[in-house]
Length: 317
Image (tube, rainbow, N blue to C red; front, side, top):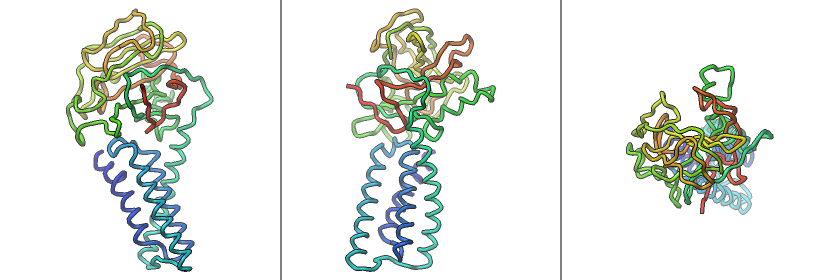
């Protein structure tokens, strides 16, 4: 996974920007194709990829570099009345290849952008269920391009049914003000992640419907597929249930039947269950089926009226 991140989020964007700056096309039409293709790739990666390391602001740096390079070349063309670029066969071939990649980038960008649209379906709103700080949405949105949880929405797949309630879920990281969320590239110790140990609070006024506790926090990237949600708390908010999962071992402070108000402490973010690294899994559903507590009817969720989508930031003061 780290190799894919390096190639797609660091090497490829930088390589494209360097190529654009040093090998502009030899005529205006080819140059426009070059610009549009590179822009589509950068936009697709920027919207569809998860920006944690490199941090969330990296795509904005790429966008700024793209604008500066394009503007400089445009000014050169206007002043000189011709092209400052090269019309070599090799560069023309590279442009053709990048144009193909640009189509793929456009596909990614389209579906990622669609994922930012809140569907015209039932939506429930909650208070931020975590302590003051900066948070980044890892998975969230209305398309699979930006929210992997939507895979389990398919009722025709029987093995998804016990987990269908989490189909519209959010995965959330705690980040530093500079946008970083861990100490190192892939540290195995959960405590080296900003998320680990962050207080989790009640998302509404209601009653604790179910608590599952006693599962150990996993070393990164080891996961526990037998206990997918790990330690979790289910809060009955009246017309819907909110599940807060992957909580830290030994941190849960409530029991089933307890009454809570929005903002009351429930536990801490951890790395229990089927978690690739410390994060808070959060979703809303109707019902709490016996034997399959995450198998209720999934509901779209907003936090303080905002629809959280991938790479979106939530600032709690």
